[in-house]
Length: 292
Image 1 (cartoon, rainbow, N blue to C red):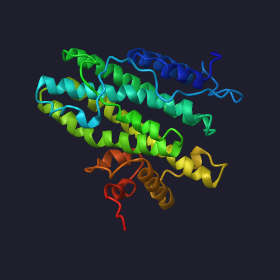
Image 2: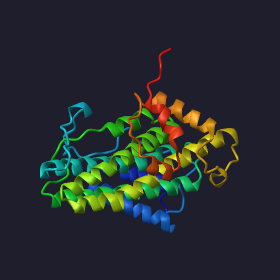
Image 3: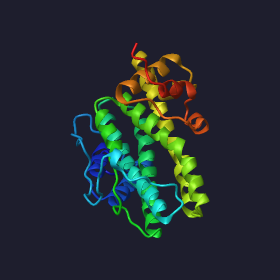
Image 4: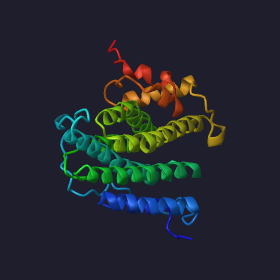
């Protein structure tokens, strides 16, 4: 058995600057947790500080999202490299986001064991996505760090660092769901451009797994809402239906408070439904609030 707790291990990942090593370390920790070699989520007697910003290498030039060059439509090699680089960068941050939600909120919010397991699985997936996309980028004649990127995802993490409900809503039910909206178009662009290898990687590995990540956000958002009314509630007793009006209203208010501007349609209703939430969750958020 490993005497280290899961949160101690999560902080090690967050303190690892190299994204390839971050993915490798995260995978080994995930395997230990899922196989029971790491048995305790945290030590009740120890509060471990979580850094505001994870360790990162400085080999990626960061620019403001508004100054990012256009990625193109995957018709040229240059465009395909830019899109895969952008996706790899997003996945590198997704690794940190998954370990951060465990380390920052797991003990603080007294979350059940299933919460830790769900986000360990998410973290393991994100690490694999990063490694596969970075390898594909090299096959396309580029490398991770060769192009500029932005850190918009971590800006949202900082904005939700005090509130687990907000973190689940914004990162997992807005940003990750946005990924579900745009991935089918991205996949078809790679196919049209003759790059079936990248299209297959996105369609067969990344896309279906991202649905499960979004589902984890929806599931634990519902759980927290239910627990606020009944502290004894278990995750298994939280209803799977997605039409609890009170929870949906709470979702709307949390997103409006922590996410700037309306959500962008068109929405991938099929993938969002598979993740556990229907149009009543997100369509009202695509409309600007009236100032009346």
